[in-house]
Amino acid sequence: MNTTKVARDMGLILVAFVSSCALGVLTNSLRRVPLPMVYENPEARMLRTVSSGAAPIALEPEVLEFKAVLGAWKDSGALFVDARESAFFEEGHIPRAINLPRDEILRAKTIVELASKSRPVIVYCSGEDCEDSKLVAKALLALGHSKVSVYSGGWEEWSASRSPVEK
Amino acid sequence: MVGVALAGGKMIPRILVSLVFFVAGVLKLRDPLAFADGIAAFHIFPNWSINVLSTGIPYFEILAGIGILSGRARSAAALAACGLSVCFALLYASALVRGLDVTCACFGTWKILQASTQVGFVRALVLLGLSGWVYAKALHTHQAG
Image 1 (tube, rainbow over the protein chains, first blue to last red):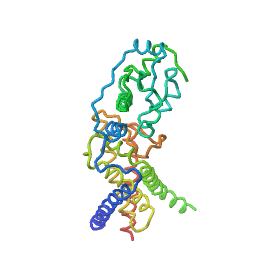
Image 2: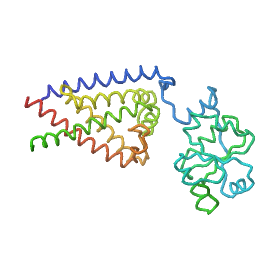
Image 3: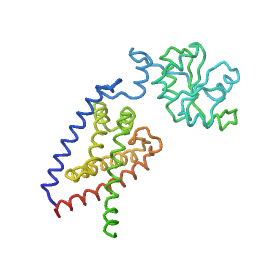
């Protein structure tokens, strides 16, 4: 193997990599909404976005079980928010629920501003393991909604219980 | 005729690797935030490095993609492609070992190319094989020349 050639290639790669990172930093600074120098995780970004720059507050939504959720759905008073991606929402969701995926609340918080802030809101996602319902619920709390809960069983439990579904 | 077909056959991996890196770079440039989230999902890189990588790597991939098709810098570009593929494979392997479910946004937010951790690992290995082949050919051509 031609070691001189390999060494020259590696030098070229190093120069290209450093130049690429410098170009990335430069073009990022020219973006309309540049990424911050230090990475923020989605939860921190969401809370910062919805609280308009104020320091994130430790907000924890109430967690509801199936019976309570079914009762709230029958009363028709609560706003149901499906935090899954739209493709899953379109396949089936709790009747009267609106779709509000995590990424959309970052880009369009106006959707949730339409709802009265004192109206109970129940957020769900796929099931026990998903985090998006908690993220969206925290964002709604930070937006000033006072009665926000998370349905922990989510779509998996609701659909398995043979409760009504909408497509 | 056979010679043309053979030359065409040799070009296919080169074109394929070049296209994969070029397209992946362009798609990542369109949504660096999604790529940053993808990098963070591996829980390996410190927060201060993630946004620099998420904005810089796409340009590096585009350079590698163009370089593989070019004449002069082909071996360096192919070696860069090998390096990136090794990094991707190692990241996916570590995610598999730790039981992480990672979607790295390696092709931006283009859902059709988003893959599970297992598929991502296999994809990285295939890319490594192809990049290695292109690099070996580029070195051979250099030595023969």
